[in-house]
Length: 109
Image 1 (cartoon, rainbow, N blue to C red):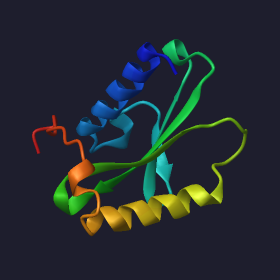
Image 2: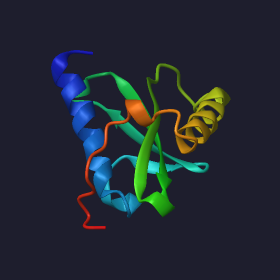
Image 3: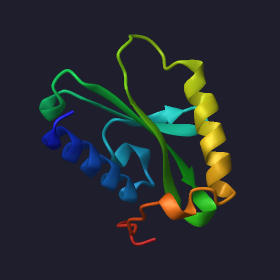
């Protein structure tokens, strides 16, 4: 991934601060108990990226749990859901408190 592609993905993640209505952010869809942001084309070219996150409603937080470059067709591998559940559990226990980047919510909530 080049610098421009990285910056594009970074900006997509920052858009998640507007999350509240999944229809408000293009490419976001439900992924079981989690959410998936799909990005492909444009500045990314043929790179097919997935960013998985959770809406921790009581804390009004969006927590990015995993991202990867999708290379195979079809559904995401089952290990992704396992990784998401594990990382969210650790996040709620405070394991990532020193490694978190926080952006203020833009939706006024």
